[in-house]
Every structure is written in structure tokens, then in C-alpha cells.
Length: 174
Image (cartoon, rainbow, N blue to C red; front, side, top):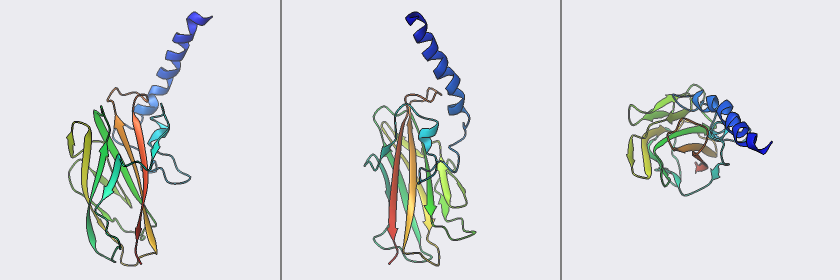
């Protein structure tokens, strides 16, 4: 009976592999890791996500956000052995009808109040970096939460061996 265990395990992994390939262009827009929603670890599930790590950073936000002002932001992901990388960044709350992000390269796309990429605009060894611009809404709530999810991938096209990072960054407006 034990001789079949490795074969059964391999069959289980192969049965799940289509999940990783189900979104070959990028993560689903809703997979941002905010409370009550999926994250990249839904499809890249070998280990649970790393939360609030310095390996994943959102830089460029001021101590206090001003209404209607644009900010140049940088998303950085560091992970030893990473071969490919992607990120998804979304906002809560959002001014209705606004598309607050502007891509800093052609490898990034926006939709509503989110921005994502599966290719780093710059990648050196174990670090991936993306640049973008965010425009604060004209009417500001007390705070804005940026939900950031990133995948440090091994590029084997399977749901295994990748590392997911999740951070929530709060921007104060008052």
C-alpha cells in the first residue's frame, strides 16, 4: 500500500496544477488579501503567506496624505532565489468612479482602485521593483488602507515552491 503513496501524492499535486495556470496573465483582481477576500496564496498554496514582512514594501507615502495630490510610489519585493515576481495593490476605501493609479511601466495594468503586474519593471537577482503613481481622492476619509499582495515565484508553472507576501499599509489623512 505504501508503494502507491508517492504516486497518489503526485497525482494530487498534478490535479491542483491547473489552479496556478488558471490565471496566467496575473492574479485575479480580488486576490488582494484584504479581510474576507482571497490572496495569491489561494493558488500558490505550498505554505501560508508571510504577513507584514519587510521583504515587501510600499514606499513613497507621506506622513499625511493631501487631497487630490499625486504620489510616486515604489513596490519592492525581496526574496532569495526568486525567478519571477508579481504584485497586486488595492485601496480601501475608494472614491467612486476613480482610477487612482497610473502605471509606471507597460508591465503594469490598472482597473478601478487596483493595480497589478506579473513582471517586475526592474528585477535584480533577489529583488523586484515596480513604480507607479497614486492620486489621492479629492474627498479624503480619515485613513486609506493599501492592500499589497506579492508572489516571489520559482517559475515552474505549478502551485508549489512560490512564496506569497501580504502587507496592509495605512495612510493617514488627518
